[in-house]
Image 1 (tube, rainbow, N blue to C red):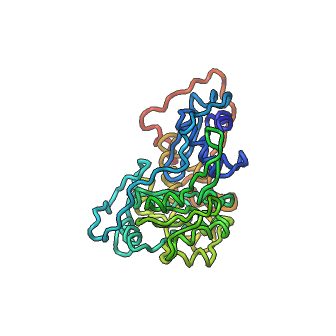
Image 2: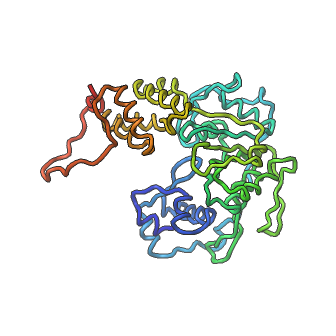
Image 3: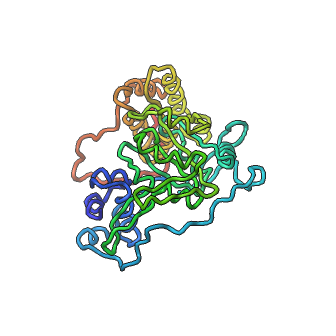
Length: 380
């Protein structure tokens, strides 16, 4: 693990990234990555789905095996105080925005069933009504859940997700033996926490079947890999899932759909994008492209995530570069249509994906951008 991170010092890798490259299960990779972080031999960032990268100590860790003293490897985290289920009307919650998420980002609540969306989700949780959020990537599904549930645990689903990634599996301890590491499903059940199954429809139905007994009237699962142990859900345990219908391989089975009594479509709030002072012309382009997606003419349109990225890129590299990047991140099959829409909206003659140009002379010095230079590049 340390060698993988040390060989890619500029990259930030998720558990899934590393598991695919190392050929190990997500659970084993997660444990190893957290061990490196605990020892100060790697850095962790991100909310919901953690990300890891090398630091100054990673190269040394990759060369020499460091074994922690016996007993420092805990097979199971101590349960925290379970979330108490209180009638929604009496629960002191922040329901109007912006709400600061665990990672520090701000979430701006939207209306759902005549309520702020975070309040609606909390009421559904109090009533133990599972929710499935569906919509294109980048529309804010994960952000909404993180804002609603500060105690959230997240499973980032994909085709390689295993039952062990949900429930747990045996991994090698620092002392050399093997211990059973409980997965996020067990942790959420025993600590009364919310669990987000992100991209649930990319996970094999056979794997998801391990989740269903925890969601029905039994509210318990059997951990066959660990002595047939029975895990019962504490009050507050709650499951919410995310589904991206347009993603290749995403299949919403009847078995999965039937477990979620409430299903909520999530789309980009383009009015919010304008309120966040994103270039109104680009927001208009995104809205028009989204309408064409609804009509079946296109397969992609910029969502709020891409619009926020556009705003950041524009501030650093200027408008021309940000527009070129917006075109470049579009799928190849939709890129020409996106470029045409951008050309018409901003009045330029041509726009192409952001591309490296010719080599600069050796004597050319890098000049720091002056104040306001990010906007002097606006097409005329």
